[in-house]
Amino acid sequence: MYGLSKIGHFLEKIIPFIFIPLIILNFFSGIVSGIWLLIAGYWKILGFSIAGVILTSLILLPILWTPIALTLMKKGKKLYSIIIAALSLLYMTALMTGWCLWIMNKFTQDVDGIMIIPFALWSYSVATTPWTSKMDSIQTNEFEVVLVFFSQLAYAISVILLIFSIPSAIIVSIFIVIMMLSYILQLLMIKAQYHAI
Image 1: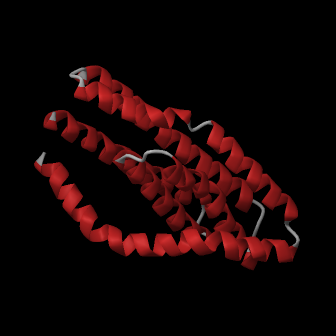
Image 2: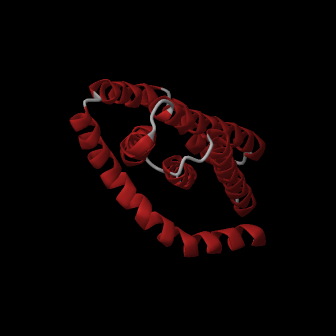
Image 3: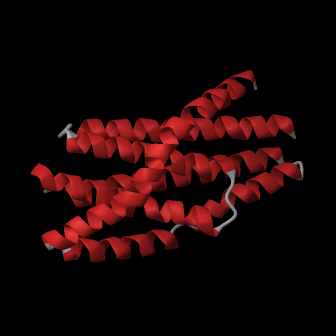
């Protein structure tokens, strides 16, 4: 329990410094890159983006598993709740990681030069918007907040690395490591709730 409070204390100190740039990126990346891509004539990519956001919304139903697991835990069925929560979090982490990396690859694979900037920013918006919008539309729990925050952080770092032409294998590796840290943090959160009940 002491280790989790140490992590929580560290996150409380560092998140404000990371959160403000992410808010700015969330707000402006879609607008600026969308206008840039429209002016440059990339209509097809914008249509594909809208379809992708709709598709992602359809596969988000398992996000509801975590509240079910918490309810089971409160009813004393701790083992079942831990298994459901861990699997749910693993599913969501893998889904979010796969979606983000697929969008990043799809939007930036054949782009170079200065055009990497609007494509990378637009891909950030397309990849993170479904998750961020779900945070507003359903009852959000702390696990989802952590997962969305880490996905935005991993993607923002990836965009910077893309702009500086870092090899894609390194970008993918960094993204996956950040998302695995998110999963581990969420497991620690489950453990803390398990001991609190």
